[in-house]
Image 1 (cartoon, rainbow, N blue to C red):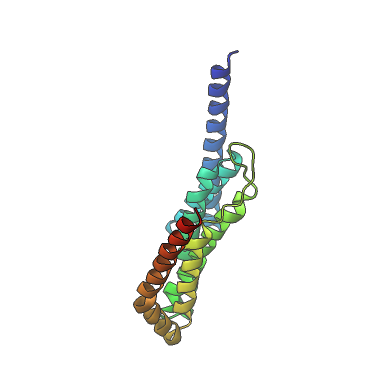
Image 2 (image 1 turned 90 degrees about the vertical axis):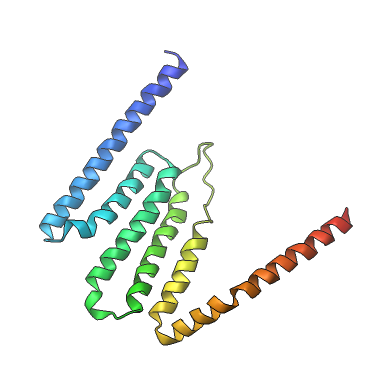
Length: 181
């Protein structure tokens, strides 16, 4: 059998396996929703995210764990808000959502340790920690109430100063690097 036919056969097997994992995951979430007397729509987003994660693990595809982490974070945030709705007031509800959503971004980085890249390396994907960290900080500040809102107002007004500082640093560093040549 030539190499091209082997690749096609392998891709077909993997596709069937991933399709099976997707259907099984959706079935499990449907069963849980029925047994727990939960609204299926509440769990739908989380089920879709879990499906991507399972497909990424089974297919050893980092490309699938990225949407899996993001969608799972959104789904878990929706479930958390719905289940804790009575005990929270605004802006705490939004803060809770962002805190839980940020865990989905963390999940991407953690899963990257277990799923190798195409070349077989297991490099840590650190970049998802940036949006996840930003969401966690904003969520924590929203959860903190009026003090957190005050800090967010300061950040909202002061972030251009940070950009100016970074820009000046890069400009001066560039001049330094040019002088070294």
